[in-house]
Length: 65
Image (tube, rainbow, N blue to C red; front, side):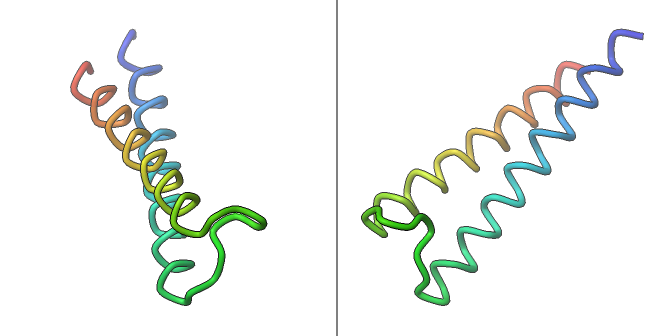
């Protein structure tokens, strides 16, 4: 019964992290800005870091099921 919220949270974090990482990679490969009005390197780095953190949180949630 307690594993339900952990599975849901893990799924949400994994989907968010994966989608954000994929979107960032596509934007960088097409040489398009990741965020308007921000240094391209800084915005790509911050978005990638946020995606990796979300994927790690998703993994952590799945490991505690």
